[in-house]
Length: 168
Figure 1 (cartoon, rainbow, N blue to C red):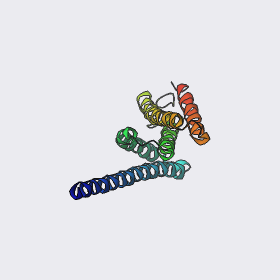
Figure 2: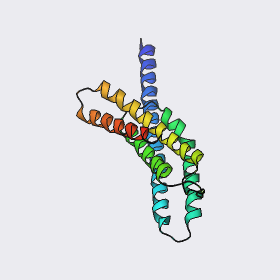
Figure 3: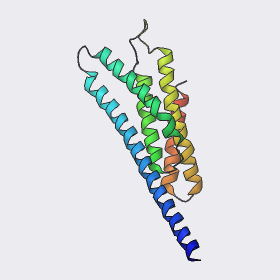
Figure 4: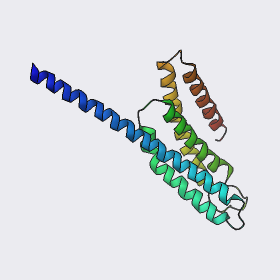
């Protein structure tokens, strides 16, 4: 019996450690993505009114979008269902949506509009973030039907998904 008790204790300790490591990794992912989103916004705001910075701004924004695409899949695939994850996904969706829809990612074509493939890529990425946020918010809401904050989070996600439908 002592061996069984000791084995159970080791297994329990290992499980707790694994959960702590998973939480730390999730928090680091959220921090990295939030930092990237913040840097994108800061760069764009800082260069917006600088004369002659259009080409540099376009390259930086395009590179930022590509890097967001690189990290999006693993982050979107994570299974944690919490408000922080949902908020991070929505913030990233907001950044990408604004960049994709309001500003071109490349030199303007003859009409001055964003090149369709680059705009579509950004809208698609924003929709990926918003969709995953909505899925997690829906699960959070179902798991906590009496939690008013969970219902507000779901409502906000519904609004973002609705707004994306106008982008098509």
